[in-house]
Image (cartoon, rainbow over all chains, first blue to last red; front, side, top):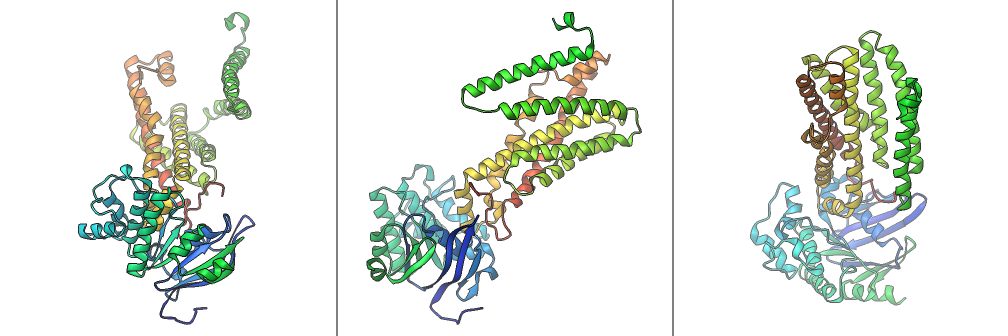
Length: 230
Length: 262
């Protein structure tokens, strides 16, 4: 059943669930994400936050339910196109061997496109790494690598940015650098974003709404302060 | 020394097998001291190998006197058994047996057929079966190595593969570095065998030909011929199996199904 069209509704899940070997990872998750908003998925460790995020870009197959992207059921969208639209940044950057520029070109090259050097520089400027294009990724710090990873995802011009604990593997300084880059992108470009984090302070700094997960179920969803203070 | 004690060839063979197996078990015991437990696997493999080779030797004795089509039957049975054996190295990968059996059948089978047709392998059962079995056995080892390496590489690089998928890469592209690495690694033994031929080892076939009265130069050249055929059969098998298994570790929605602990 297609949900009623809503102009600013970019993402909607309906009764989304995933069970692996009788273990319920996500259960009956129904929520919406509107254009330009930042939704934080918070909850204790093992509550299914990352599992839920992986269902959104179909890296894992839901056992039940579905996702609508701009009103279209996501099984009607080719997986590669879906993943371009819902760009994901992982906890670890997983950069490919080579230069920063080669990493940024990876996504567009999959569609037979090449980004102009100016576009590369522009993307790098957005994450505070102007002039890094020719650097070898082997020589980057953890924070720089994660910012390259964010820029690499942005190179695909996603509709929604899915961030899976993007700063949890970083030291405090790098964490603030990455967070500042994300804040910059989200606020300046009004990019829709779903952020998985266990850090409630970070969720408050970046998100407008929050979704609290416990044992795979949504227990609260709403304005960030209401969800985190309840 | 054994010859002084055993005049009967059968007893001599069994005594030799026992001594050789004891040496192998000694290594297993040494490995155990380092916490590596191979006892059961090694013992079962050796007993099984001995029973199989004696059984096959007895059957061969009968079949070698039979019509020529029996070599086709024997080689096909060997390919199926080789597929089952090397598929065990691909634990957790769906369709490993089918992939292995088809790859060995294509890789070793096509080289055997072509070489027999061209006259490089004699059509007599006494020649076709032993040479063909060498190609199949080596194709089996190469296939096992390729699948095992591919599996290990994929499991060690789930993050990189899923990152590529998340960036819109095709499933095949996301694992192409590991397909290439597995193919290259699986051919190392075959390349080293050719490279060290005559210097590090004198293969059994050449020794056998010399003992049966063949001219040494011809025996040497034919040994190279066999190794080149082994390389061709193994390479083709590995190429096909890595390409076939690549598609089996993804779902139709391009999700990586081979995951640690799943």
